Length: 420
Image 1: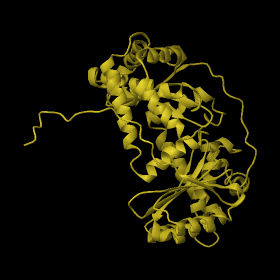
Image 2 (image 1 turned 90 degrees about the horizontal axis):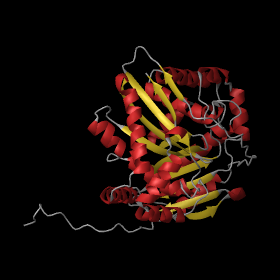
Image 3 (image 1 turned 90 degrees about the vertical axis):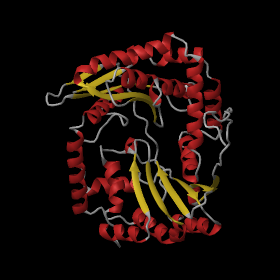
């Protein structure tokens, strides 16, 4: 009989070289990356374009241009499009981020052809109907009003404005004024000039030769623009502290952070480990102190948020108003401890095992592996990036952690926002 009082033997987690997609090219050099893997007859297709808010001439234009593609074409109404997608049990989603706009199609392999036909129709013949735009603008305005009542949303929004300046592509925020300004003419111009700029096509799942041929046939006609990329002046904002009081709120949201550097920086990967130790997982120091010991919050986290041209540190939580200042002091104390006291060997080993185990759990299906590829490729990195990540986690030392904490986590370099 198995003695459950005896734990199973443990072993060092070795690096697992996971599958990397095969590269092709379509018309005019459109890159196509295919990862044929998995046990289910499902295909995920992503068209990733340099058409995020970074490139828009007016605030909100990128978002509304992309969202309006599903609001009607020359052949189908918005209702027709929704019914068509439901008929095949598929999904078409549009995500607009600061650097990219991504069109994602998920479908059963047997329904790939009709769904490709619909995707191309959405991309090639949108109508930008004025009534549908007015409806979408109204929904977005209502969402802004709801978000304005959420302290955590307001705090993170304000922090980004402080870090990047409200006029910079990474710092600007959608406003009611910006929404009201947008017209179909703005969207038509952005669609013509930028929406399909420097696209990459990522396909994962069970993809056979027939599927690959269908993808090539249907997506060859896409007009791929290659406009010049514009790099606006980089902000040089000094760290600051802001308190936005809300008399009717008993809870306070705290957001702290600073600008860091792009993914290709030599200290990016080591700093991921430092961040994980500080507040990146449930066993982190911020969680143990502020949640478990002090009981100030249900949850607190720190995160390195990657962008194309840089990244930034974000520390965030929500606490009762009376504990807001004490929480900020405890965050500062945990950072100071990282800067002055070597990390105990047992704690560092636990962190390393957690990070390596988490990485293994994130590459167990074709969609997840393609996400890892995308997270490297879109930043100009290759598969060696993950080998370096493994080596960094396995071999980082307590002195190195202390050095990085002193260089990049100085409390004097952190901006702080309290809302509530």
